[in-house]
Image (cartoon, rainbow, N blue to C red; front, side):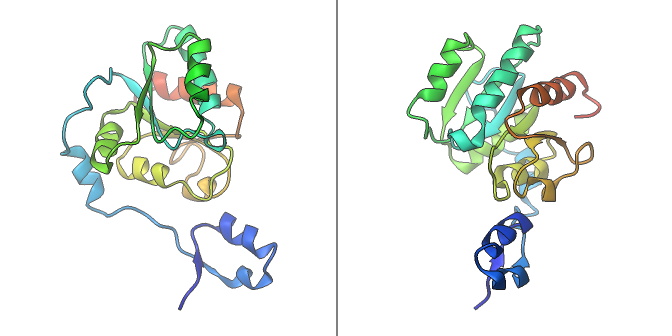
Length: 197
């Protein structure tokens, strides 16, 4: 049998406890080459999701950083940007994130679609303005890979295996994890600059 790691980050963490892991090969997972074309000819937008919207597909959990995203998104709305935020994924926050959004007065701008079938997630990716993955921790970032395969501009945290997938300013914009100000700047840059997107 063979052992591999999904990122250098994951391999190095294991190697801290098991020196033999230093020799393990890194094999990045990806998406089928047909998926990008399927995204573009997929079914229509999900009903009830207003446009334009920014998308984050990840379980709603503290380590995924959606609270940071919501704070940065609030600054965009306050600055007059006519945009919505769609959060797609299972709620592992026991409603905490929804309460936080309500406390910020963003109920009409943040839309929860829950965990969706894969074809619906791909449709959301196809129709979004751009994609955000604001994780505090991440071994690699499968949803980020899918968004990039769909040809979407991305803003993501410089954490875990994410910097192995993208270079800041080349494949996307990288910000430090939990850096609300940095994420505000990245979101604003992608919102304002259609050519960059």
